[in-house]
Amino acid sequence: MTHTTGKYADFESLREQAIALRRQGLSLRQIRNELGVYNNDLLNRLVKGEPAPEWTKRPNAKDDLRAKARELRLQGWTYDQIEEELGCSRSSVSLWVRDLPKPKPRYTPEEQRALMNAGLARLRSAQDEAREETRRSASREIGKMTERELFLTGIALYWAEGSKSKPYARRERVVFVNSDPGVIRVYLAWLDLLDVDRADLRYRLLIHESADIESAHQFWADVACADATEFDKPTLKQHNPKTVRKNTNDDYHGCLVVSVLRSAQLYLRIEGWWHGIVLGSQPETGKV
Image (tube, rainbow, N blue to C red; front, side):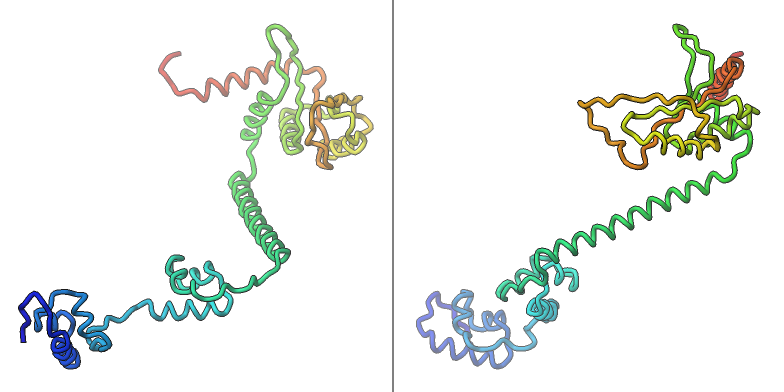
């Protein structure tokens, strides 16, 4: 029967027909077409209370996830934990479980801070290990240096850190100052390569007056394989109360000054070697 009028005076009659069609397994669209009822609100009222046929129900893939989310929430899981466990969005988790009571905190504030600090410690340890592995890997790339490699390295090292003569202050002496033990060891190995007699070397400490002078002397003596008692008188830096020094821990040993006696000729050769490196590093232009 098709209902074509614009008014639905006989509602009960229409409802009986709609229910009968519903029980035959028709969908809302089929009932609408059959009865000619195109008002959705009226159509829903006509079949109110009648379950939809099974074939019209679409399976909801999230029903199982919703049930699992609610189960986990009741177990005391947080939104973040449920989101990570089920791979759902936070908005979905909130929609599914927001009617459930908020779980009690699993940890006290003190326990939470301890857990956070432990996590940060593990993270920093992993980061430190990754940095150290980068250093070890890079170190293996160098391997054993040839004499020429050490020769060139020493020249560049001296020209970067050593004393240099100026037109306004001619000082043609080989004097090297540094606070890095590794740099000092490389520099001394370079002087050995140049056949500089260790007896011609003089050592002097440059350090803050508040530091442990005796300990620093022994430290640099061990680095240089020298006798600490033969060091020249140290140069002490006076403390400026307006500045805040950060180099006050046990790792602070000041700087070591290494001077070579009667070294004017050696200094001139170093200048020439450095000039040769500068020229040798430039691209060829065809000019003589």
